[in-house]
Picture (cartoon, rainbow, N blue to C red):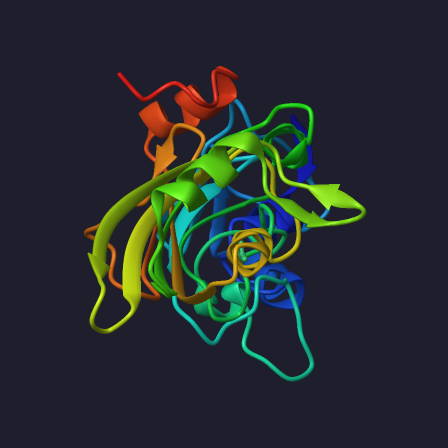
Length: 247
Ligand code: URA
């Protein structure tokens, strides 16, 4: 791909467009071992080697990051009031990353960030039914009746009946009246898990996403930490067999 040298460097997070222009004009940037002083010079990002201030800068058109989202940040690229998931990645990654779908402000766990609009579209497409697995703590005693209701498809309101979902009871404390569950849903409507429990008379008090399709939360990431997806994870997502566990 042919791309301007200043855009190449700015896309890769070397600096702002004006910062990288100044590096280029000062002779701090080499292309194939030769100093290039014109920010507008076109570079072949697949073939040429770019070095800025002594470090190689490889070009990646798409980036894929996994974030263990903490509560208190919003799944948006910018927000006037709240910190966003993009603020957490500040200084890392491309400027055009966006979250693939939304987790509520108080939900934790797996969030994929990318600038690959095609993949995001596939993963979010209602037709693809990409599985999303959540762990939740529930105020209420979750029963086998609830498991059956979820399996049939919970009626949320006149306009929306959830697709059949698989509900697994992990623990029930009858004295305290609380439960821990895992639920797998195949769509991603607004507040979906919370609304499904509300519909059976219970309240989600803690929610964490564990997986999205074949992509699982890396439990070694603490809340607020992030890492690039591995090549294997990217390949599995792109292969389109979203709900198959990774080999
Ligand atoms: N369902 C919800 O209710 N909230 C989320 O953040 C994700 C799924």
